[in-house]
Image (cartoon, rainbow, N blue to C red; front, side, top):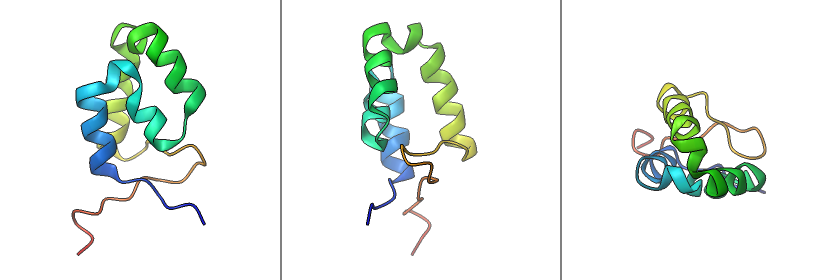
Length: 74
């Protein structure tokens, strides 16, 4: 069973290391992560789009599952 990825961790990785695609590697999108790493998040544009998608709740992990927000779970 694959555990869903955490929304908060993905958000923080995107904010601080988004231009290197670290958030994409974290959620299992390896090919996209490599492209972002080589192009510096297509000079920040792709990173900004991913950041907005994470904040809105439409960003999915590599297997198509939504991110889990563990802060408000308890």
